[in-house]
Image (spheres, rainbow, N blue to C red):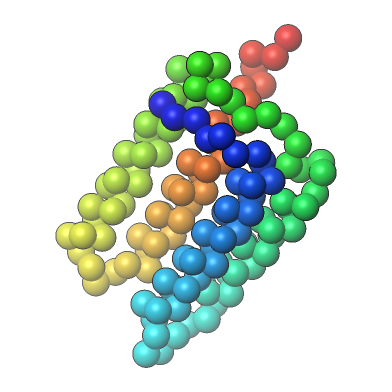
Length: 124
């Protein structure tokens, strides 16, 4: 489907930035009576990914090129894009409950950034 031409460290830092942005959106949505629990959770996840980006062991590995992707990896990307599209459609049609869809958008974007992971079953 598509490939990401970033290193694992760059991907982890991009996810950390994404978490800060999502925390800001979550805080903005709940602004009159903010429940800081979800905002703190998003910021905590962002700090976790930022910390992982400096680790040598957890960020080592190759990103898979588009030509080397298996059919299952391409299908996973297509299904995750479909999930992201449906979630955005839900937000457009039902603006009253953005908090729950915000979590779905966040997790879909993280999954798309982390994908495609190398397929361990094809290693020799």
